[in-house]
Image (cartoon, rainbow, N blue to C red):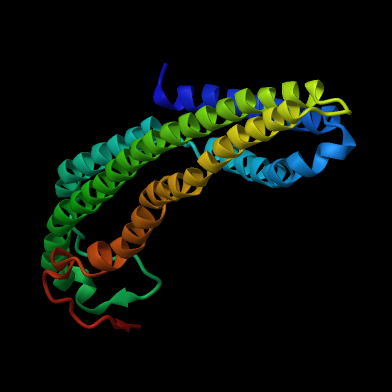
Length: 257
């Protein structure tokens, strides 16, 4: 099973566990006599919004998984294209003695022949360089996607462990609430307070999750933002300004009737 598949499986399990935890929180509050709700509500109520945040994290993680192997295949396609142009561009026939046009070019096109040959040779160098540069960026993007998967898997595991701990802790709260029926004994009150304390400690563990999510988003930037910026820079750096495509001096482009 690939890391991507593991994230999908883990993410689905986590979403189910979060809904289970939500039900358990409600069960604890329903099981607690109204006289003692003041002991548990301040700890339990804020957790509901935190669970909504966790759901959003997991759903976004799954939505953005992507496919690094497809990116790598695209990179290989660009490499193949570059190699083909490296071979074939040299075989392009140079311009003949005339250029097709509604009017005749000056000198009937013969003055362009030598420069056109130089341009053909330049294309056989420039196009592969462009293709190989794109291949390199795609390979980098695929590797960045693999890094994103690794951070995503670690994030899903962290959330899964935190939610499992909360489910175990809230079970103790439920048991304490069921046992605490008026008239309450000091021991019963102490037991409820202790179980709430244990649950609160588990809730505190959720504080580490946003920081880990930041790591996931930083890894995602490596997949999207950086390659996109590099791709946008390519036409100016490689195509428009490629020195080999400037070889030769073209005669004036005017026509004669």
